[in-house]
Amino acid sequence: MRYLLLSDLHSNLEATLAVVDSARSEGFDQALVLGDLVGYGACPNEVVNVVRDLAPRAVIRGNHDKVVSGIDTGEDFNLVALQAALFNRKVLSRENRDYLSTLPRGPMSVGDRTLLAHGTPLDEDDYLVDRSDAERIFEESDFQVCFFGHTHIAGAFRSEAGKVSGLVPSKRISLLPLHPAGRYLVNPGSVGQPRDGDPRASFAIYDDGTRQVWIHRVEYSIRDAQERILAAGLPPGLAERLRRGI
Ligand code: ZN
Image (tube, helix red, strand yellow):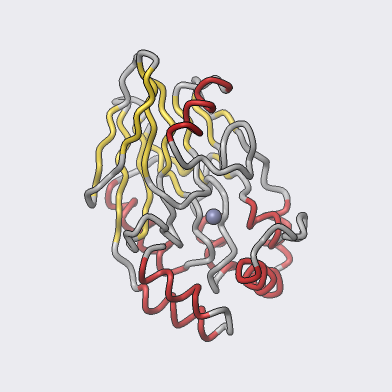
């Protein structure tokens, strides 16, 4: 089975469409979505509709999905994130709001020792950033492969023979083979607001038969996404960061 992994789409329609297009040409059977469909960008309904049309095998919620759908207040959000979340909440259709508010919390199991998480398998809102975070997660949680998002940084951590190493994808398509003796934490990166210095939209394909993960970067019209953000009256910094990939 070939899975498409999407995370942190953040109401960026142009990036979402470019990713789905590219993933279709690569070929996949089912989609797995790691949360944060909305927030930051200007097109929450359009992005939620694209995701729903994919009929994903699993979708878990992210922190922005909770705030935009109104099941969380966002009191821990910074002002810019909160402003965008409230705009997203205002324009979201009732149907999409119901959809987001009932998304399950991670971690979610999808097959043999494979997990999906937004933040980490221990806490949906926690950030898994560095190797010491990864070491703790490998120790305290049981899985062979866990896909996670939330940091908007594509990459992976591998635990093998008691050693944890970080893997940084550096190409347009980076292949990560999963060794039977290894355990893996894999972040497909952010579709709609990458923060690893590469402004291209990010996604992953996982083949559980050949046990390979490919992390892909795709160009999209950043300018169009920026114009929508500005036209919606959202903070200009949200448009600027798309160009810089931060
Ligand atoms: Zn996010």
